[in-house]
Image 1 (cartoon, helix red, strand yellow):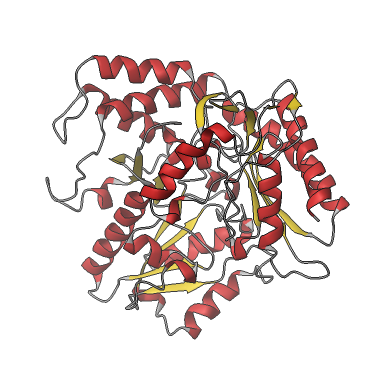
Image 2 (cartoon, rainbow, N blue to C red; image 1 turned 135 degrees about the horizontal axis):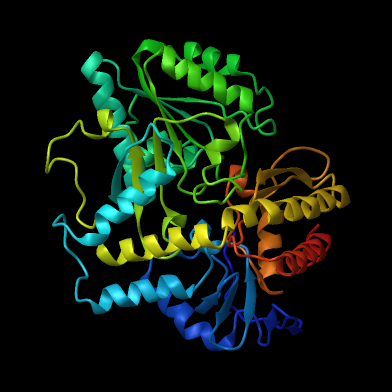
Length: 452
C-alpha cells in the first residue's frame, strides 16, 4: 500500500457549511505530532491520512488548526451514533467520577444490564452474552466454542470453514479464519482444520450458486460431518459485499444438516450499519453466534459474543474470561449508545440515507464505467471497487489516490482495504444527514474525475 506523504503541500482553501480547509495538507503545525508517532511507533500504524484529530461532532471531525472534514470512516465503523455524542460522553464521565474504573470479574451494576440489553436485541434463540474488549476476541471465542461443541460429538469434528477475502481480526485464530493470504504468511504452520471457500460476491467470484460451496469443500477433501462451524462476515468488510439471499438460506440448511454452527461476524456490520439492526437480517436467516464490536459503543473498546446457553455455558466458572471484560466505563458508553441508536431511530436513518448514497454512487459508476467495476453495500456502508481501464484487475493506486485527494478537500476516509487494496470504503456515522451526504458525493465525483 502506498504511504501518505507528510510533507505539507498547498491545497485549495475550502469553506462550506460542513467542510473547512485553511492550511496546507497535512497541517504544518501537525508535523511534530506526526514525526513523533513515526519515530516511536511501528510503520504499520501509518496507514491513515495524516490528520491529527482534536474533536468530533456527529458526522464531522476537526483538527487543532481550524480544518474540518465530513467523516466517511466512522473511526473505522465504530461511531455509529456519531462522534462525541453528549449522552455517551455524559455516561462515561459519570461512571469515571463514580470511582469505579475497573472491577475484573467482580460484579457491577452495569454489566448485567448491558448483557440483557444486547440479548434483547438478538434473535430469540440467543439468551447469553459474553462481554469482551475487541472483535478479534469475540471471533476467537466463537471458534473455541464451535470446536468444543464439535469435539463432544466426535474428536475429529473441529474443522472451521471460512471465506476467501474475509477479515476477522489480527490474532492467530482470527487470521487463520481470515481470507487474505498476505496477512497470514507469518504463521508458517497453518492449522489444516481451517478450510476456505470462495465468497459469492458476484464480482471477484462470479458463480454465486451454493453448489460451489459444496464442490470446493469436496475438492479440499473436507468431510462435511467433521465441520464444527462456518464463520463469515455478514457482509464481507473489505468490499462491503453481500452474499445472495438464496445462498445464505442454503448455507443455514447445510449447517443444520451437518450439525455445524453458523457464526456471523457482525463486528463491522451490526447496530444499524446496513439499514437493519443486524446485517444478517437481510438474508432472513438466524446464525448460532453473533460476533459484535466497533459500533456497540460508538466510542470505547468493547465487544461481545451472543449465542445460546447450550453452547455458551460449555465452560465452567473461571475458565472462559477476559481481564477487561465488561469494563464499567465501556459498559456505560455502550448502554448510552444502544439507547441513543434506538431513541434517534438511527437504523431507519441508515436505510433512508443509504438510498441516497447508492443513488449517488450509481451515477458515479455511470460516469466512470471502465474504472469502477462494482459498487457493493447496503445502508451506510459501501465499497467502490476500482479497476484498471478495460478490465477487472484491481487498481489499488486509483483507490489510494481518491482517498488522498478527498482528505485534502475535506472528506475523510480510511485508506483503501479489500481485494488488492482497491476499494474506496464509505462508512459515515449513522447520524449523517442529506445535506452532508450530498456535499460528500459532490466531492467524491470531483475527485474521481481528477484521479482517473
